Image (cartoon, rainbow, N blue to C red; front, side, top):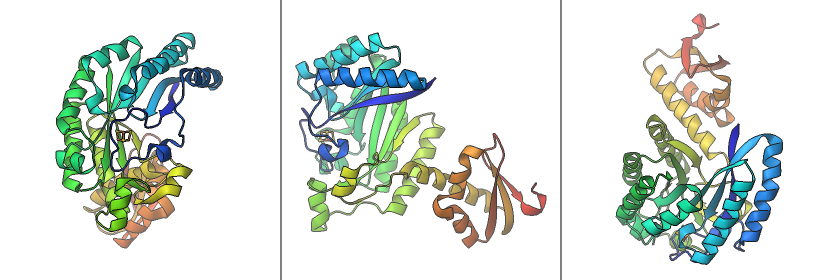
Length: 334
Ligand code: SF4
């Protein structure tokens, strides 16, 4: 059965900090925090829909810092989620996202009792300099400690990182990815920084003190991260912010594209093709790949084909089920 998330956004409630990049109102597209009754209603509506289309789902509390909200409010939401998970078999877990410094043994015991199965930590960077420059209010050591504690409680660990923050560098981004791999999460999310109006980053950007990484540099870097995490059996469950009219309206700069993941996957194929073709003479080639990869091998607006043509390699892409990438000189193709 196919699996999805029913996401419930908890905007900014209880968050003890105001990170340089964060405007939860734009990111979540909602201002009013949901009550337990809202959660019950949403989950009841979605349960019918999910069973109609034959899918199961995790109930996902995202957006703010779930374990930092007032305790009575957090348990109100969890009670509604737990009741829905017990009533509707389409729900097979509860996940939440929070800050690394809002995890303790006491909180984990409570979450476990309510049936929470996965926690995602907004780590953003594993470099203290970057964390400090972006007003995160926690350290890389807080991430390591919280990550180990979550795993010790038998709860699935997810980690979220950003690229191109204030005072960030490619070296710091790579170091963050390596530290993530050492912590062995089940999932990661990678978010290139989007600079929103009304945030401190927005002010730094307007004053000229801060520029994020360029789009091309970010695609190269994020493609590298995608390859690295996949090689280490860590599922990359999100790359880039969800498409949102609010974000598009309030965005001043940074990297945002509704198909950002597909662009990174496509860059990975381009890099692989360059590597394979680099050992071969220029000329005409047929590239065989599984049907699911064809658009990524070709690239957006045939970008990969054009980039290879610039290097003297004229490529035709053909479907072959089950094949990742096979390069054949054209006179030997079929
Ligand atoms: S901790 Fe999360 S919700 Fe709070 S300000 Fe930072 S990014 Fe936003």
